[in-house]
Length: 248
Image 1 (cartoon, rainbow, N blue to C red):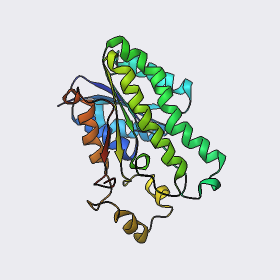
Image 2 (cartoon, helix red, strand yellow):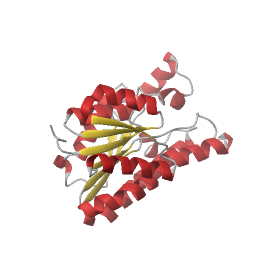
Image 3 (tube, rainbow, N blue to C red):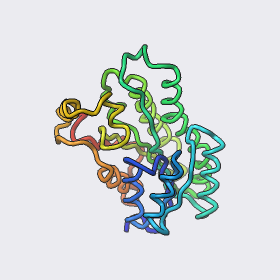
Image 4 (cartoon, rainbow, N blue to C red):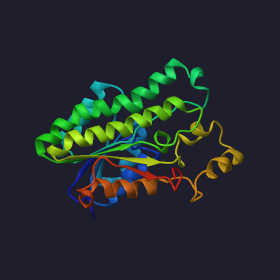
């Protein structure tokens, strides 16, 4: 029970990697806010988790919505120990110059601006307590970019740099900041990454992963639990690859 007594907010927590993190955190004793733009899905997962979870409908690209989320968590628990910035979107594969401005703005708002907004809402609280752990869910796309996902790749590279600069600035305040870099997994975004979900496309994608499989929500939950637990108190500013060797 490595997270007993801890409280956590997981954005995008109702499905995919986020749900894997929620399940692992609750199994390790944490109380978790499942924050998701799909409020119904968040409430459904919270019901499954029992007393250890509560749901919050949030738009992570909207400052007022993020502030309300933070206020609800602090109001419920009096403190927030862990923040997982997991919510993310992508654009469909295509030449970089053909991606629409609407898609570009959506990717930057959800993948990048959200990290600023959650930091603005929760870092002062963590500083006041002299403790906290922030985990940003980046991607191997930010380390070893694939063609035709240019602006998604760039947003995840930004998140890795944001993780490192946040870690340097917040270390004296007792707040650790790390990132996870998964390869694509069995999540709602998989089809968007590949362009189409066919056996041929899956085989082509899997051929680039030495271990030979996609990342799973369980993989992400296990790695997230370690980095957010007291076992990792000497680790900050890292971007941990959970990718089956994809980036080697």
